[in-house]
Structures are given as C-alpha cells and as structure tokens.
Length: 173
Image 1 (spheres, rainbow, N blue to C red):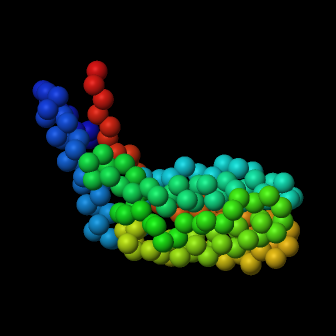
Image 2: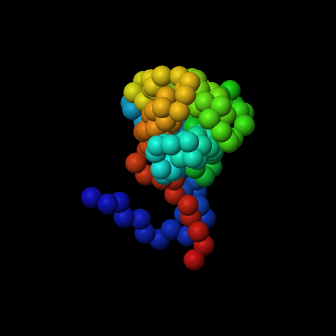
C-alpha cells in the first residue's frame, strides 16, 4: 500500500526529501546485505570486442565508465551518487587505447584496478564478491577481446548492485 502525504508546504516537503535522501547514505553505512551502491551507474552499452577497432572502442568506453563510477559518492543532502565515499585509490590513468599495445595496457590496468575497487569497503557498503574479472591477462588480440568483454560484463553487474529506488529530487512547480 502506498503512503499518502497531504498538506505539505514547500518547507515541509524540502525537509522531508532532505531527510529521506540522507537516510540512503545511512543505509549504505549499515554495511549489510547485497546492496553496495546508493545509485546504479550507467551500463556500458558499447558493442562487445570482436576485432581491433571494437576492442579499442570498448577499452576506452570501459575506462570512461569506470573512472566516472569511482568518482560518484552519495551526497548526504541530495542522496544522489553511488559510493559511501569516492574511490580515489583505484582510477586508471593509463592513456586511451589507440592500437593493440595500448589496448592490452589499458585492459590489464583496468582489470587490476577494478578487482581492487569492487572489494573496497571505504567506498562500498559490502564487498562485491561476485563480479570478479577472471579473464586472462591481455597479451594479444584474442586475449584482449576476451578480457574486454569480461570486464564489460563484470562492471555492468557491479554498477547495477544498487538500491531499487533513486534519490528524490524535489523541484518547484
């Protein structure tokens, strides 16, 4: 059954939303259950790696999505954001991929950093023990394709481990 709220003036509505959004962050800090993020990060929709050009495109998309995900912290007022605290330890600084050598370097760095990030309790309510990247290190095009596709699958699953409802944003009529 839905909750009915009547007769809220602007001040009361603002306060109610502020309190509800702050509780999202409080819920994460309890550190129990399988919800590890307040908000989900956008899924990586770039096509799977099947040749060098698609491997380059996916590696660069993985880097962009991953670094954006790490920087997203749940704001205690708006309730928006992913993590208890942003992860400043594990972003990748490897240059964008332009050829096979740079694809391999970027994917191998992303794998190491992502696997360290997903279990970081300073950022997550609980460690993500499920979505580990186990693909072999990228050493050639076939292993690069396999690793890129595995990272996409694991990161998308990790990004989605979030509360079922988004933060409330109150706008003026």
